[in-house]
Image 1 (spheres, rainbow, N blue to C red):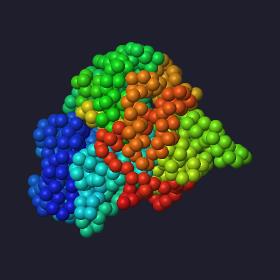
Image 2: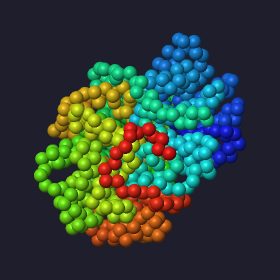
Image 3: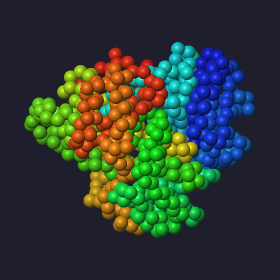
Image 4: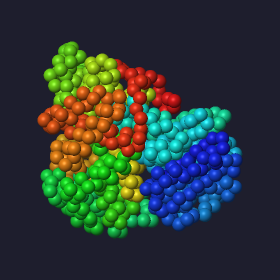
Length: 640
């Protein structure tokens, strides 16, 4: 796990000071080493900061460069089946000088090009230079577990693992995207390919891009080359997935919340190895109603793991808040809990931790799997004039979270993707229109660009509604929120977080199971639980879903009140995009009626203000347009 950066274009070598500034910004991602590469012709420079995990010797340092220096790789991620690929390459005559996965990825690209990525069970972001063709290859893993950002100037392409590194280059204008701000306020995260920085884009998950001076940027999907998913017993596939994700030459552990997904990871790990397992959970001594520590301890005892229970008081969590908000590479309303558990894991001596991310998306753990089908049925049967009903309801209390949700479900088009987006909204279309002053308050706005909306609608073209919701949760929530937060909150603590549920074989095999079977339930994630029934106690599987909840509402009404007040005041005075009167109304009404308004709306304004100030981003609102029903071409990721 690492940080990568690069600059490609005429006389790129002269921009080495800019690249080194990017590496400084990526230092937290790689405390174990740093390397640079300059192509023989000077048209490409790479930088890398290393968190050593597999083959910690210098032989796996990066950039990884061919003896003639005509090929170079910077790679962030892990290839879990690298030993199998290595054996295949050796049978073809390749000789290896290291014991790690970096050289395997390098020689795969050397031998097969981007097509070789289809054989990798991996999470990755890659920059690969071919001096002979003067071409850069960028590629990103299937689900988007590892980030990869890029920008094209008049003469150069710049890429990096984090947006803050792009800004540190000095080659990217510190200008926020108005559309990205609308996206953040809609969903609590910026939907890709946009980023909060106007000129910086995210490479789409499962995609690759080639860049050369003669051809510019061209895009493709290496993931279209994947072979059919392997078949077999789902439980055995899960054990194999967890076993693959346990590979490490440094201390590794498992985040154990006491819920189904993390408990399943631990149970499978116990089946996969007889060696010592390390687990970690967080407890809340002054908020015991939020604590799952007793279930985590029960599961740890059952599996014989060496368990770390880390008690965190509200004061402890509050003390972490400045560091957690500073760690946000893009603004997010979530992620602080991930920062807290990652900090605890690193303090416990771990460098790698396994997470249960992906279980809810694959096996129907969210209420959206019930709510969206219900909304679809209502919209198909309803004879009421929905727009009139929503206008009346919105007029009664524009700041109400409950009314906003109902209005959004009434205003949205009646397709699965639009109704799922309505379910995930923070500020509804009407609220967003009022907050940003972006046109008719009754018009539905997707809160994202047309390419992204088309991408999600394409993902949702499934014969079964449940399958469509799984795809939307994977692409529209897990990728831009959970995986992004997991990456930079983990890496802020120099901790690699892995998600065995997203193992390329297990996840694709799971999604091929009929939705009516995979998602049907009388208890949470019933089908998956049945596969692991003998390993999971009823105390874990038969209780309501419980998350790692921070007492943000209480903090905002108490110890954080002055900070939030100041931040929202700064936002309304410095960001011309925001309607000051409307923004302040949410904050004032929240203090009067916190349950009715909900903490997440004023919190999102607080986060946005802090982010824009910390990164010194200016905002221009001349380009934002109201959109009643976005449509557009298939996503290409190259709007600019």
